[in-house]
Length: 130
Length: 132
Image 1 (tube, rainbow over the protein chains, first blue to last red):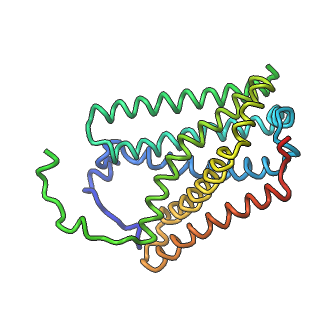
Image 2 (image 1 turned 60 degrees about the vertical axis):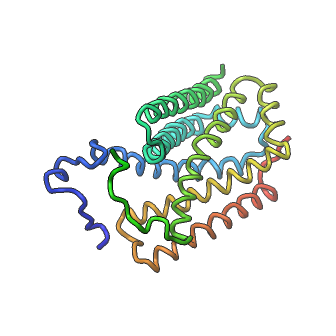
Image 3 (image 1 turned 90 degrees about the vertical axis):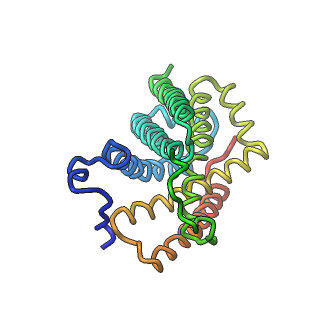
């Protein structure tokens, strides 16, 4: 069975420490947010296809509904989190210099938080009729 | 320090395989979605929240020839990442490591992504929302 891989000592596996020194938390959240993305993005794509038009009034009327705004907020959380985790792995794999790696992590977190808060605030503003 | 470690002498000997292409495309598509996809998504929401004028200037860019190229590219990127993501989740469960199975699922990822992209745009154009 392919799940029988053992790449760490018994003590390391008990402590959940691999080469990342932090256990499987990052790996697991990547999977949980992937599942969230799968469900929420199917809903999002199907909903866009079912809208009468994609003009301004049609879109804000759609977003203002509670049962649209809430899944949209969950979608923002799940996709931005998933993106942050994924790009982090990319930086870990391809940016060799420690200082540059640190800067890349900071830039990534700034981007994800800034764009994520813009998206979240926009949905709330539309939902609360600002 | 890292440079002095012994390296495999055969790292430069390889040829393209569909499995490795799936892995590379998963990484490239994920980054494209993370940066281009999420930026456009946030811009779309911010424009909608700001004003009709802001939304119309988003719509003008989105509906331009360059915009259409970006949407078609991004939609294919999305379906490619979606399909190989499902393949990853299946392999996380312990299934699909046999060489034949792995090659078959990798092939289906590419075929499925192209089919879903074509299906999405067919539905969008034939039955989907108006743009006005």
